[in-house]
Length: 167
Image 1 (cartoon, rainbow, N blue to C red):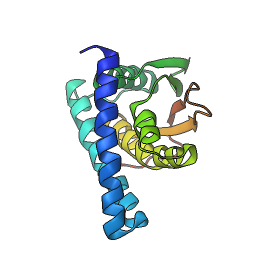
Image 2: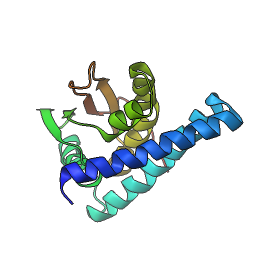
Image 3: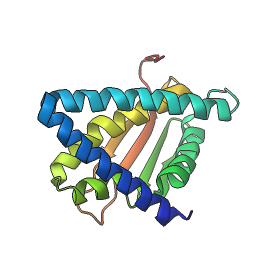
Image 4: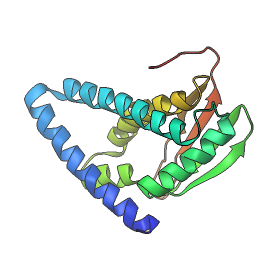
């Protein structure tokens, strides 16, 4: 499956996920629905990070190695095009191209700021926990959110100022 086909498949799955979220929010309230979504993304990040760590030979990776692994992971599994725009052992900044999450939420009727809030919560929780499985001394953050559909997000992987260990 080519990268564009993968992106469309993930986008369609995300549309389903957003519809499910709306139903859960109707039953339990928006706050509880987002809390459950957040906790799910934490668990998913930990699980996928452990898989990637095992596939990488169970060695701790620096920020550059993690960024290249993420670049491959997102490209193959999510159909996203990522470009490393800043690179050092302490800090890597990645620019994103098309995003299945953004496209799915937009198609589901979410407003730009709602998508930004979701990404700032769930995507960051997933990625930060994934990365901490590869190197507990690294952090992940959404450095810049896209201002328009044609714009890109910038994601940063940095050395943590204090170590926080996750299971």
